[in-house]
Amino acid sequence: MSVEVTLRKGETVDKALRRLKKKLDRESVLKDVRAKRYFEKPCEKRRRIKKAAVFNNMLRVRYENM
Image (cartoon, rainbow, N blue to C red; front, side, top):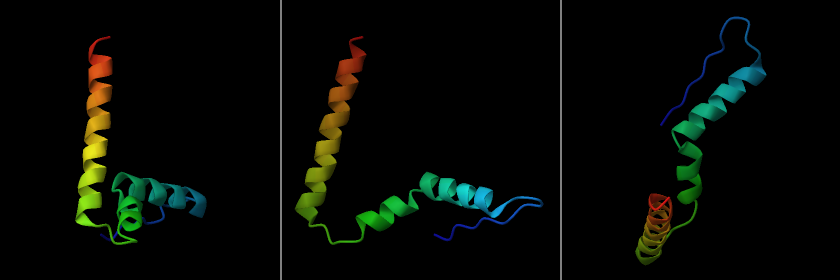
């Protein structure tokens, strides 16, 4: 999971950092690191996934009727 950004000719460091942050966000590197910071029990993981599925299904039903 190495993410690399090279400075382009005439580009400032701020713009390169912005590109790096966007790349990290697109590849969800920070999300994975934060999720793996602490151990999550298998039952908690299943509960979290099920809760997200229920929420997504609720939204799908709500906007399907519009």
